[in-house]
Every structure is written in structure tokens, then in C-alpha cells.
Image (cartoon, rainbow, N blue to C red; front, side):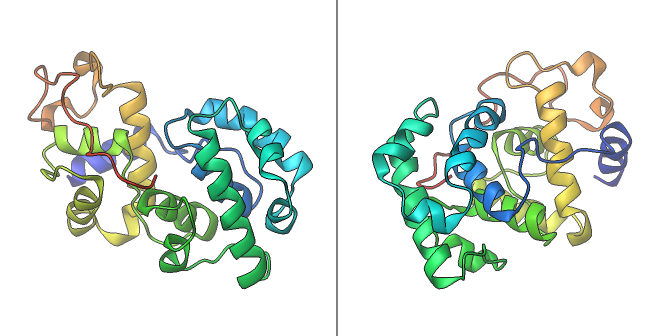
Length: 217
């Protein structure tokens, strides 16, 4: 594991979230929108949303129809619009228009599951967290670091294995490796820098590994 992490660190020294944001509120909104939607599409949607509703207080007062229209090209946009409005009201009224730093408080916000809470805690507040998305899940299972069938259980396995100080960086580097090399379909094992430590090298398939669906992103 140490050798793999060191190799990934050399390969992806600047790995970070691809969701564009300028503050914790923007990252929270972008991460909620990213469920079943690509980061690229989210990055097209958020500028027009923030241009009209720049913070939680502004969004909390928005008509839901207006929010739906702004995020319509994002998957599950009706559900996400409801969650964004509910979350905006809580952040505006209970937290003084500032996103809470505590992951437990984040988890109480509508539309926020463990992955979203961990992404915000790690990237907005530099708290140790290891969010498990489909890329992290897939790569970790192929490397033999996890055997669990859900993202939450996989997170517990990985945080027990990887040193706490490396959680944030490991999350981003596993994602980058999953996107660029260890893809779901046709993983590029022949050019994988960590293939020598991978028990799945040459035999991984597209069925390998998606986390069980969660109720929240």
C-alpha cells in the first residue's frame, strides 16, 4: 500500500477536486449537483446558478421553479432543487449563512450523504476525510485494499488501512488513477504504474465493482 501511494503521489502530485468553487458554499452546492452527473457538466451549471443566487441566504428565498430551470440539464434536477433549497434555508437560518465544518452537521443537510460531507470537509476545511466515489471504490477493490460491497463500508476499510494524514490526498489520487488508467471498462493495465502490486492486473472487468446505491450522494 505504501508503495502504491508513493507511486500515485509522484504521478498525480497536484490532484485535487475538479469541481470549480470559490468558497465552501459553492463546493457544497457543486458536490450535491455532482450526484449522477459529471464534474464537467456541473462546472457549466454552477456559474449561472451562483450568478443569480450567490449564497445560501439568496438561494433560500428563490422559487423552486427558478432553481429547477437553472439546473435542468443536471440529472435528478427536481430532487436536487428541493434539496438545495432546504439546505440553503438551514445554512442561512441555523448557521449564519456559513457552511458548517463539522461532518456530522453536514450530514444533517438535505441531499448530503457521506461522500458529499467528506468532500466538503476535506476540500473546503482541510479536515481529514476519505470520500468514496465510484473511482475510489473500483481502484481500491482492484488493488485488494477493500472487500466491502458498499461505499460506506469501503470507507471504513480504507480509513483503517491508510494513515489519517494521507486520507485527503489518497482520495484525489485514487480518483485520478481511476479516471486516467484504472477505468471501469478496459483498464489500461499495460501502462499502469502500480500494476506490479495489483492482484487484478489483466483480469479486471467492467463488472468489477460499483458500490451499492446509496440513498444520498
